[in-house]
Length: 176
Image (tube, rainbow, N blue to C red):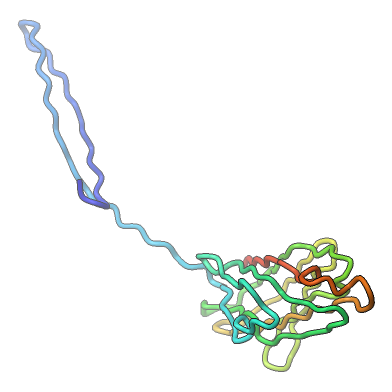
């Protein structure tokens, strides 16, 4: 068999006047061509995704509609990493985008946010400490927005326990 081909076998039964049975088998082949349209809005790794001091294990999903990573915090630290990820509208029309994320419940983490920016203009901020972290906005046709990550960790004794202030998180997006 060839890859991408579908083979169909059709059997016919014929009765002759004398009661004899004959079987005829016909084989037909055809090819189906499929394609997948990429999502109109996608994440892309930004320059900050490779900053190993603050970001680890950054990865995009196959269709680029979600990403995950480990974001490194230190006791008493308040770090902002610029352009960790980007949001790109590949269409010729504007798209409404909804970002959704996992809630961060680690009590040592006092702030964990993503700020979506168009150059120096803030479009919105997603707060991982919220009960249901969601942010909705519109991105113009062909536009790319950047996302800055901020992670603030409580200071004082008991808060400097190695990786206890690191945060693993997943963000997803949908567009309409």
